Amino acid sequence: MVDVKAVIGKIDEVLADYSMPKRIKVVLTQVKSDLSKDNKGLDVTVTSAIYSLDEITNDVNISMHAKTVIWNIISELEALKK
Image 1 (cartoon, rainbow, N blue to C red):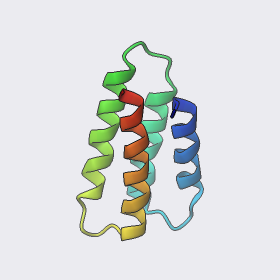
Image 2: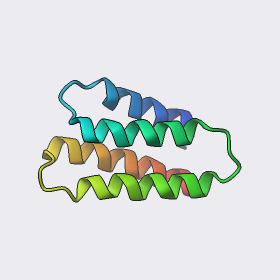
Image 3: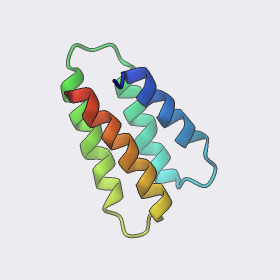
Image 4: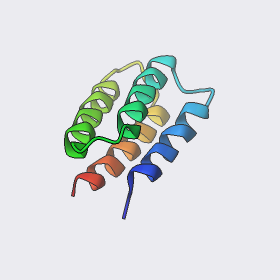
């Protein structure tokens, strides 16, 4: 089972990757910040994060490696909702 800390850890790994584009890091930093807040509306936060990350993957200028990493994070976020 996936927990919020595991997803944040995965986001930290991506943020440490120097080859990741800055616009992806900006969105991931915001998602991490939102997930780190101790709110009761985790489902809303997770859904919002999924939409933000999905929007990035639709950019044709993003490498396939970056898209794959983002899709993996989205999958883990979706597992949190269930």
